[in-house]
Image (tube, rainbow, N blue to C red; front, side, top):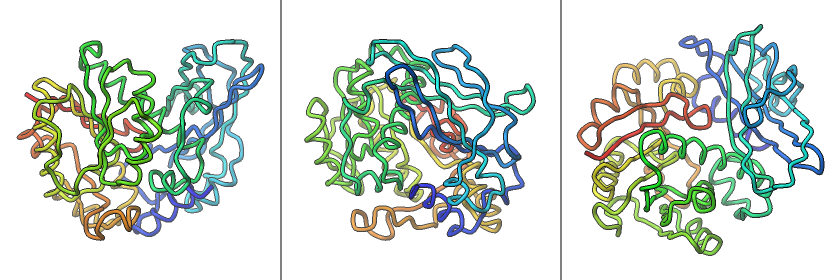
Length: 363
């Protein structure tokens, strides 16, 4: 899979192997990359990988019901994509579960528990709807690749559904979602996450914005019930002050230097209603352990932020010096972002088992 090669290339290009990290023995990464509802069965597949070695067994929960345990299966594609990790080719899983539900629109909650002996060492969760592939449009492959490095419409949708679940759960944890009438997806791209909010959240007015005008145009054409807009590289936007009850942002602050981050944080504060929630992903300490060299990691630990690496994913969309690979610690966020928001929580590896999620409220 090309997206696995992309992950491996980033690890090697940025100078630090996933396997080299000595700071935390439980660095964990994995994806559900195949979920399919067939005539009489639900098939769930993917991979889950820890630095500590292969898991002893894997247990799947469907809507809270435990399914038979399974040992890891071979995934040579993961091994090729992440060759620096000796056991990466043994990271796969595949479950086939008898399925008789006739309601293809019903939500299916899926949870994978990764066991060492009888102890749960890691886990990952997602949500699925049987009609998801038929009812949710996917953009051209070039726009899919721009988002996550893959060329797989299936993986694009599965990851969007997972991220939707991660965001909606946090909104529900910190606010009465029934009183949320306006939500903005800042950095929406082609609407990968926005589309799930439009269909499943019951929030009446959903907006999306991005600097990628081509992606925004596609979202406008394929999600007419949403409100999408292209925005400039730097604020302000055309949104009104105190306009939104909630703002979400996946993998935007992860690509901005500290000055640009602060400019956009001030803009998010302006357009968010008092008491509104802002949920944004960041590259935290665990991402820095994986992607930074030892020298860069020491510098990151000393300053709490590292924003000097260029990322060329948006080459041709953003100027060369604009889009970065940026990392920041909890302490940096608490100290420097408190002038914009009340920091409610920072959920380590809360998005895609990799990004941290900062949960903030406008005072």
